[in-house]
Length: 428
Image (cartoon, rainbow, N blue to C red):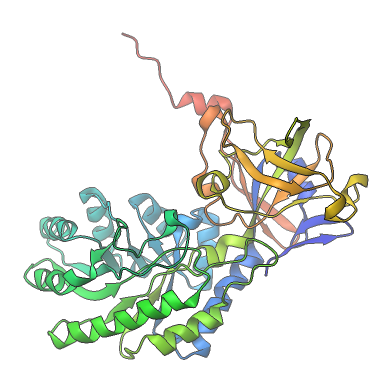
């Protein structure tokens, strides 16, 4: 569920008018709902509790899905930890109030500087993705006279049935150590003085809408943990990753957190270990919308276009993944906004960026808008603003957080002067 609803023909975020935010902030902008963020976190936690998993579970929000500090602070107040992939994300998590001992550091490209920063901060664990990384981490920890807590990310070679660009658990993906090399990895760690390998980590992909791949991965992980323990390795933590899908279209119905928790309980049979989960889009996805203004319409020989002030610089997912997002008018009382979809003209909603691939949506049935009309792009709270860019010298879109009848700007739109101030002309 989400908290973006129409009241008297006008879209609101909780009790706040979207139009009022647009008048105050300008478009395009991102808007997040505090109530939706909190709701989805608590739904996930309750699902784990209801299946007897909550007492030993840590929910580490995937910061890469939405890294705004105010969003992270909202989830920190709910009890969330953080799954990070850079030192920058670590700084965001700590600034948001997430305790370092609730942070896990994932990613294939951790630098030695990032390792040192994370070690000094006292994070919970490094999800190590190669033996080369393990040896570097051991050397960094030795230089600081510390011991690095390690969980190996293992690649179970399971096809999650998701988009090829967000699949992470197959043998051809860059992530993790091959399953058949697991025993060697733990033996190597045991021989090093400044790492302690206590965990197993898997993550098979994102936007997964079928529970079968999860079940297969969790059963495989159970067998591996028991085998590693039999070899004398003290495995006390298992990170089962994230990846549970959400509905991007109204008719879609992916598995619920309760269904997911049931699969964990039924498929992962190691009772005496801590569990870590890394949900991202499941919590933040439909907690955010992108609001954009119509610049003009353009009717072509083969297609009609609604040209808006949001572009691939604000929302890259449609261009990058062919992703679908629902589009709706902010105000329903416009004369052309009524009628069945069969009777409405079809449009591509495109931005001003000088690329053919710059579109927000294609072939959508919408009433013909007029310049200045506001459109709302749904389910963009994950992998929306974080993928933004300033291509074509376009300022990054501001982000707004709503709570009840109040809103706050949580990232301001930079001015063009601010953007140019970051560059210099060398005086040769």
